[in-house]
Length: 393
Image 1 (cartoon, rainbow, N blue to C red):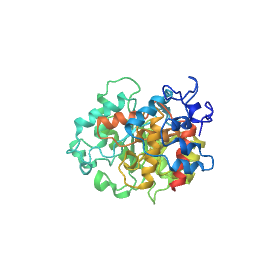
Image 2: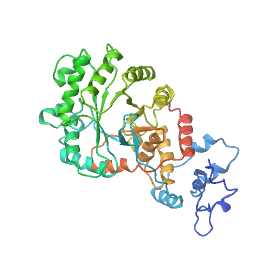
Image 3: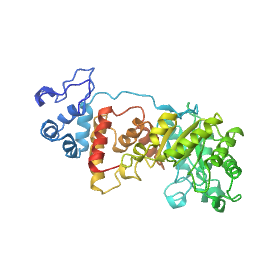
Image 4: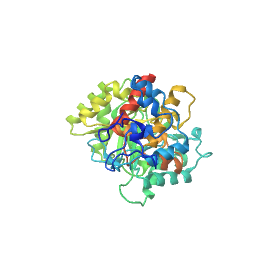
């Protein structure tokens, strides 16, 4: 489990300084998972027994107490600072490597108006921006019931972005269009049966946000719509100056490749594909979606990155709890990061942009804490092996 910069010690006495109890790695060496394990009573045995398989050792890592987390964090090397921003595909947009999702904004069923309100969301938006997060994901149907009060998700995102007076980079707002023909029943307008109807929906989004979008995406490829019609809508949105870039969501590998080819013929880059992707659900890695995206310069945006709260501790599933223990350990050796920050950073290291939901400033600050550092290759490999061992696909 050692990183190349630090060779595994032959025994615990060699690994630790007798006075401080800390690893004796030279200052320039990056402390490995192996070294950190030796700092934690109960972990060293599993890491030293040569007859045990690596997966068996990983399965036995116990939960670390908060006190032990501090001890291990102090023993770890300084976490290297990395850029918080990336390019959104070939769109030319510079966005944070982590965004925030606004599915619940404006939605009374999610607690809007009771457990959280517009004033609190404005503080959330500011806390996210101050932490380096500038990528905001929304959709025309998010909080649509509050649109009559100009408090739908799009209304709120647009208002907060307009009021933002912080430093660059400026907020980047991406919205999505529903392709179900009878969406007009909740959003108004006519029956959606052609690219023109989708462009009309885009105009509605622009009106609610209060300016042209930075990103406009097809929410999902509803049966009955040809890729040509959907891409025609994206192209027209670009031609009319209603959006700076275009993307798709919930596209499989074949659909993604087809959409890219259609837009490429018109000289328009496909910026991203938004899919469900998290530590417990790695289908995009295995079904060809990420491969197609990487080959064509399309960014993967990961929704449900915390697995509906499971990776933030809202679970009693034994296998998930084992993963949380390992994530806690990974966080400890990376400067005391939280489990959810490790889960988000894992996706960043895989090249995706996770967009966790966010209802308050504390959550925004917590998400922002997953920026500016990266898990090591060995740590990513360790997490993947543990996931495979537990049967997570």
